[in-house]
Amino acid sequence: MKILHTADWHLGHQLHGHERRFEHDAFLDWLADTIRERQIDALLVAGDLFDTANPPASAWQQLYRFLARLRAELPRLNMVLIGGNHDSPSKLDAPHELLRAFDLHLVGSISRDEEGRLETERLLVPLQDKEGKVAAWCAAVPFLRSSDLRVEQLAEGQDRLIEGVRQVYDTVLGAGRARCEPDQALIAMGHAYLAAGQLSELSERRVLGGNQHALPADIFAQADYTALGHLHLAQSPAPGVHYSGSPLPLSLTEANYNHQVLEVTFEGGKLTALERIPVPRAVQMIRLPESSLDEALAAIAALDLPELPVEAQPFLEVRLLLPKPEARIRERILAALAGKPVRLARISTRYQGSGQGLADGANRRRLDEISPTEVFRLCYQRQFEGEPAAELVTSFEEILVQVKEAQA
Picture 1 (cartoon, helix red, strand yellow):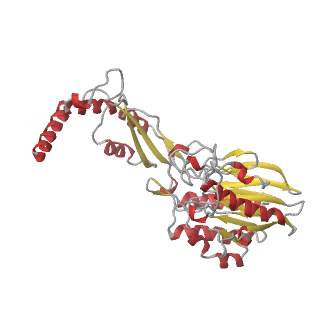
Picture 2 (cartoon, helix red, strand yellow):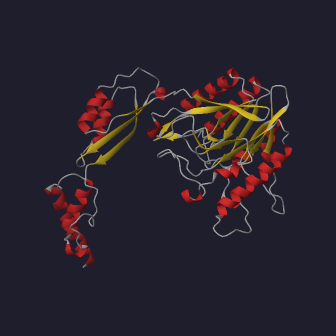
């Protein structure tokens, strides 16, 4: 049995105000072709289908169009999708009965009976091979919020959130293992932040309350393979536990990262192969080296790019390292970009100041020993290089006088 593991699509995502529907369409077309060409038996999507809990109608259309295409072209394909921390549990669960009629499993939340017992039936999905035999069971557990967890007693030193998650997976995986025949695999799905997981800068956040609630990998010890979502860089924090990563770069810092999906092969219930399949980049990202404004303008002038439709044009980040603030930076950059087939996504500016606070260094001084003007000058030097201009100091002193008069 071949399984394709992917996650963190973030349909509806915008990159600094630029829509990315073109890129998502290209990815979903490529994914459908890849599933067909590689004769995949099951598609697992481990959360964050959408970028927000209230995605635009176009994002829902993308998802439903993709699922409908797969069901029409590959009627025997197993499809299991779970919600992530960006998704709305209720919105994902709303079409459950309709999707189940087409043998599509979309799980937005867990449920409990009147006595508080976890209802595992909907979370356990049989995965059939090409002959129609059950080759694996999938424990499809969506992102768990604090309200989903039930912990009555804790041993000393135990964390309520971590133990609550552990109990959910112990229950679901235990029920799944009880259903597994000797030649059937047990696959866990989840959307969480594991201890030792590598975060992608700027594009994701820790869940379950921060790093102190990073989950230990032994929560998934009963599974033969664990398909996780949330971390946008593909990684394996423990044997048999894998993040597929996001298929698209979700921040400019991921410009040079090769995003991927995972093809996982089982034989006789045993994991026999894992292949990382690179996802083609539909839109390129250009990050200019950190430089002065004049150097950046020269680099923009030297850009030689092919003509493309607007939605396919590269994203550009201009990174500046400046000694002090400069006027009309954005206007000058936009003027240099006029007529070039590229989309300005971001201008990031860093200054060459010392970065030291007033209490740093050998000559520490009490704040009440320093005049307000000197505090202003020191703060300026902390962020920028050199002394503030005389006009700037004069303006500060005028404001200072106004403040003192207002307080008199």
